Length: 527
Figure 1 (cartoon, rainbow, N blue to C red):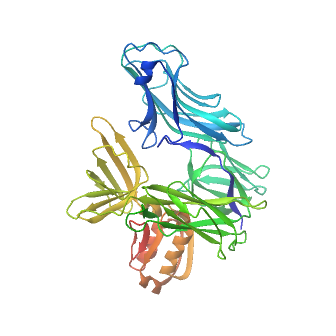
Figure 2: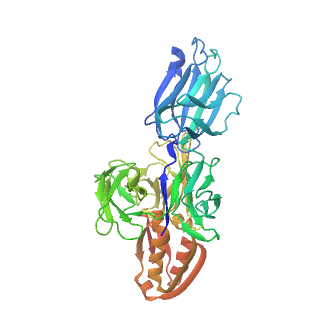
Figure 3: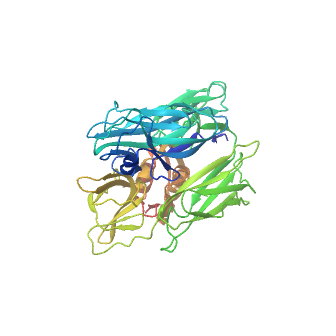
């Protein structure tokens, strides 16, 4: 059966400035200016939580003037792939003068090419978006982000100018190609709710999708239609689609991934402290691919082993451990052959500091990523399945709290809420505080759209198992937990269209007087 495989990865570099790993500061300012000015991460203003890059220029007393061309910036190396002569770049930027403007321009350069040239004529205190093509060449290039004097900047004691940068992306182009399409075939890119983002009909066997004005990464899935407008293929939902991606539609190997634990604790803490991640490789006929080498990598923690060979069942496993909390993206890649392209798949595992230990004497007790928050106000908790939202405010800045972390709220030791941080805001004035908002993992079921599903004389238990394996497991968000045994004794014929996974599961569960829930270990239960 034909599949869609990414052969060329469009992303070259992408940073939300959550850290400055790989970035070094460059500064060419008069001595006293240099002592008062700096570049750093800040949570005072950002486009993507929790930080942005701040370049702050300040004029002390008796500092002298800054000459045109002098600068304050950060630099890192970006590798441009072979054969690439231009890239698409984008960056979010803003500025603020206090009290008066100075002749510093916000500038971003890739090698010798000037990409952003933001002057004081731009509006203050709003996020601006620069999105354009930059000429370049293959090899290592310096990416520089910061400010540069475009005229003489005169000394004015305590005059300060703030310059923020966020969401910087370098990718191959502003289009996505789907190749090897038959005459009249069409490729569509849709978002997670199945709303159309862009579509294109093949020309010469290739459909070129224009995503030059979209923010990256794009979360979505591809659908392929034949010349009669019949749907012939739907890809899995992906969260890392970029301009410049190239996909091959045709016969290919396939790779799937699963884990026994979506949440583990750091080494030395309470069990579980490891996750077994298993990859399954199948050939173009759908049979287990035996004796194939799979390479493993992770964004956080350690994997053992870092590669393995598939067995008779096409499976190979590695074990993830970590010493610090975070979120690990584990990747398994088969390098391919001359006949078949390389393929890879990823899965996300949440790494907690330790198991929660709620205080049974405390009215509200909050834990984030297995770490107790000592002073927190619960502002809103909803147990309505249509929302399942909690909002919290912490009266200080906690640098260890990050977006996508898990958080739980307990009342006198009993869990009221468990979900994931989706919105995180921080403020400095008038008093430091953080506000976060998130939803339970039931939302993973509500965000999964099912076009159609039919079951003939099947038990409720088997229907639930099929819904999970076919529609939920590919998104790697929830494991299958307990299904009440009595649901195996009820058989039905069922056909549904245009449903969310949650709605369909709830209908099936209700036939057996059961309900659907997702626990703190991200296991879905129907009982």
